[in-house]
Length: 190
Image 1 (spheres, rainbow, N blue to C red):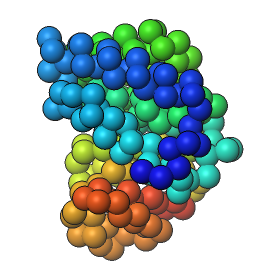
Image 2 (image 1 turned 90 degrees about the vertical axis):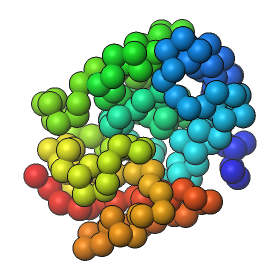
Image 3 (image 1 turned 45 degrees about the vertical axis):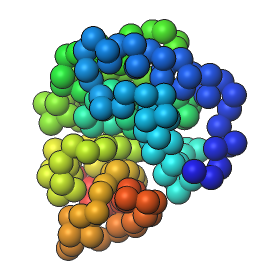
């Protein structure tokens, strides 16, 4: 990834601590397929890579759907300390890990919700992110109550992104290796 130097030393120290905690926790609870420091680093880089395509300066609220072991939501929150993130992760052992990391890293801009996003009362958010949850249209359905005119959607997609976005407007796709970062804005208001 290019532009790695735009992130603070503190961010990279937090990533190091997060990596150590994840590898340790994963031995017992098996919450991610990333089993080595290198694999975790690839997931961290994947999580923060699309930030170069976003205008985040005025963002204040974000949600991440299906955060899992923290990718991408936890890492986005560490990279954007001025944005308050709510991470939705319905699987208790993954949610417990996220709570552990939040406390250990002193990440005051993160809340963890052990819920499905569609079960929560919606509120205004500037950014909705998600990786590897479901297809694009289903994902938009799950979070449609959160989407307003100015809300930016950042979905981490695979090779089927073109098929998944057929018929959708306001889509920009940024390919990077096998990953496609789908950014949508101005879709519709509730």
